[in-house]
Length: 374
Image (cartoon, rainbow, N blue to C red; front, side, top):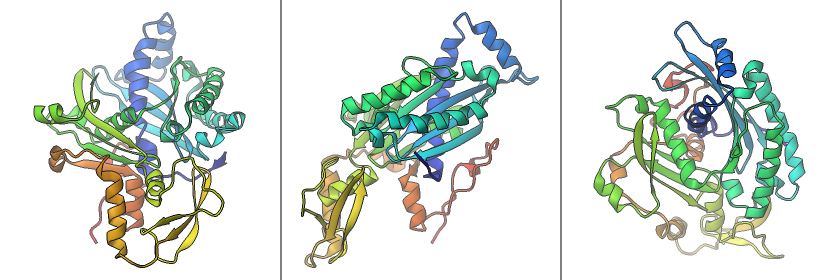
């Protein structure tokens, strides 16, 4: 794997923060404290505790996305009966994504081991065996044949089990679209302090990835809950509160997969010799090549005829009209949109570039960009 620059500044930090909170605190930490090793763990944590009984926890989360593999190392502090506070993050990323090694699984080990070295340098030695290590894969692996995806997951799991960190049987897995959406929703509401402020209404989230797009929000009315399509309402308990969320992932409507569909291509299927993809969303007379998921497509624009804007708009509307469910409640709800939404908005000049996130700072201005009027 080659080193790559940090993509999608907010998303790369945020999308797995909530999963780390859940894994480190809600699930693994509590489970671990019920075992015989509790005395040893508590003695370790005392060395990382202040005079205010503030506990320090670490969690390591691997994000296996469609365009790269990233490691997020989170450091939390938590006072008794309070929600954990994120105080520091370490991030590294490598490219290509794990799915690129579907036909050469052993080659994926180098990048995983390289990122584990980062974790060993960041987490205190005495806390290695109590620090959970997890990999969550997203649309990149969901789009692979199950057998190929499983071989990659098994390889990563073998590497993880040889590491000095806390590893469980479910440490490596593919997130389904709903899990991914809920994780992002918890993240953004954690960072905006909505989960810790009873009267503050939670915000919704929109996440545009390469292979899929997610929407997640908390319906406020019984009508909205009852009118939602089957399988889109998820109920869970966190921090002594029960949440019911509307969450759905549209696989195939991510930025790259949707482009392929609009062009008339099929995911994972190369063109035959002499074939090309034609779309009114490209300028007339345009001819070129476009690479997606390791496949190079020859593409070109349609000849002048029907107005291009209307033709392109019709192609896109046809793609999404039968797939996307609309709900009236979102009109009155604030949403945070990130990942490729952010990238495209910056490229178009609709918002300013994201401020640099300084380790140890919890100011929201470090996490979110300020929109700029044009």
